[in-house]
Amino acid sequence: MVKKLLFGFASVALAVASAASGYNVKFYTPVTVSGAKLQPGTYRVEVNGSTAVIKNGKKVAEVPVKIENTEQKYQSNTLRLDGDRVAEIGIAGTRTKLVFEQTGDSTK
Figure 1 (cartoon, helix red, strand yellow):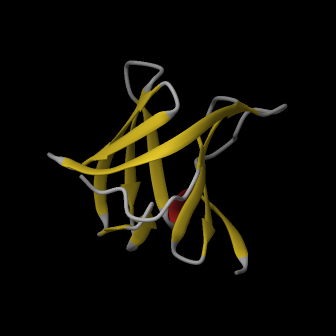
Figure 2 (tube, rainbow, N blue to C red):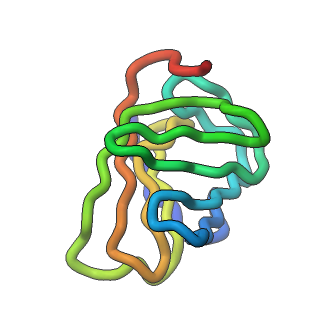
């Protein structure tokens, strides 16, 4: 599949919340995370060790995640898709990148 790098408005708005392990994410188009189809809307991504839990009022998906630091800060929020699957999220104003490992259906 063709991997895409989309900036800012294209598909995601991301705001760093109070804790370093939790982020608010707004998807503007339908996306897939670990087999779970997520409709446009605002979601909370909570990172606990090597697992990310994505919620929209209730748990929507749980997926293995790796937190990486890049050499340069992200100037804007980024989303890298593989088709409609979320592969990475870069957090504006930081060097933090969340890399999602896809393992089939992880909805709970």
